[in-house]
Image 1 (tube, rainbow, N blue to C red):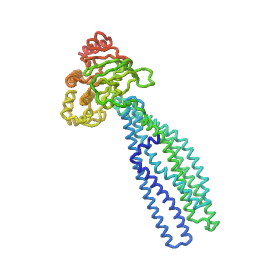
Image 2 (spheres, rainbow, N blue to C red):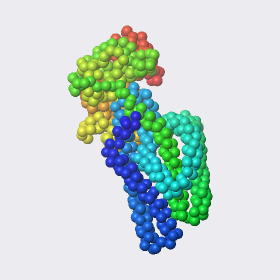
Image 3 (spheres, one colour):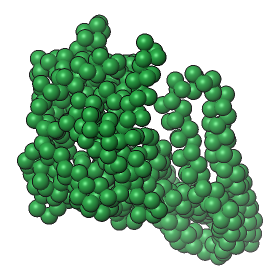
Image 4 (tube, rainbow, N blue to C red):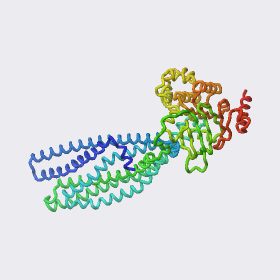
Length: 580
């Protein structure tokens, strides 16, 4: 896992290597400064000349400048390396998600993927910066300071042998208590993000049902759960500072006490005042190094949960594997289902589709009706290979869809999904998803066919009107017609409309279908609809129930032979008469 994540460092390897090198220079300077200070104080105590003071003073200034320079350089290179690493990691995660099939995405909630791309990446970024900088500084400082304290203080160094175990024991208990809380809190972040996302996305529903108070309570519960865990963890880690202060002051008192006895007893011949000062400085460096190591361990332990969550996305096996020699051209829009069965998960007990056999010639218009949960959408998803079949074969243009290059297949199939999606940007930008090179004249012509030009012309900015995220500033019918125009610009061999005219009136619906007949006669059209009027002039109508095709034929044939179709037709026509 670590090796896989470090693969995202890439062009920032140089900055990652320079950071610990600069850190080494800073540590060396900081450890030499107390030694020179001790020699200077001892020299002054022994009545040295000014030349010695100038010499040591100059060296101390030089080392201070070098230490500052190394610190600045290490900080800058660490920031560059960690920020670049996080950028690449987000890039790799996002690109990996783009490769996922629908079944892959189903394994992760949207809120969880957002948390992994934001909070988890930030945690890993902070841990990486700490590893290449602080995790180098702390052990180096510890080793150097211990060696220097033994060199300067000799017998006084035993004080650390008593203090360090106490500190390590206390830190160990704190980490042991706090880590389970940090591990669990990231799952609660998913719940928090999910609450925010659903509330913002469904704001109109929330307000129309006057559920603001309920949503506030739901958000507060998720937020309080995260706060409670962090509070518990921080209360435990807050003991770190008083424990550190206790050890620091205890070591200073012990060193001062025993050093004073040695100085007085030996008349300052064994240990000087300067050496005592440097020993106190080294004791601070040793204990601060231990504190930094404890915080490094806490941060790395926290980030391990984030690393595992990120690695789950990076190592997710994409269900849709390509052929070794993929077909690069779709011959026509013919579609064949041969003994097709499909389930959304290998663990699913029931098939979503069972024993589907269907043959559609290129250019045909096929209507698909059925009740909610009859797997109409599941059927058309297999055509553009959003999912792979569990059994059987789906063919497009006479070739198994699994033999095609995925981009080639999907470029030949345009889908207007049941949940229409527009992206933030102008109307023109959204339409050019269908054809990035479409001219303004072509865009306007297609919009007239999709019955969307009329309402676009009523906007002050016309085709340059800005669409808010999710298309919240246009109506459902307008959104559907824009999505149909976008699909038509693609000039597909197969056009799939998944209940995509449900929000437009029957007159506009009829105009759109008439445009299909004249504009794209050779394109195979699959139309999922709830209204019989939307499919009654189709070449073939499929009636689906419980994941199977229970009847198929033309409108007249189904009226005679299909009880389900006849009941739906009569209920809709009676409703129309009553309304009239």
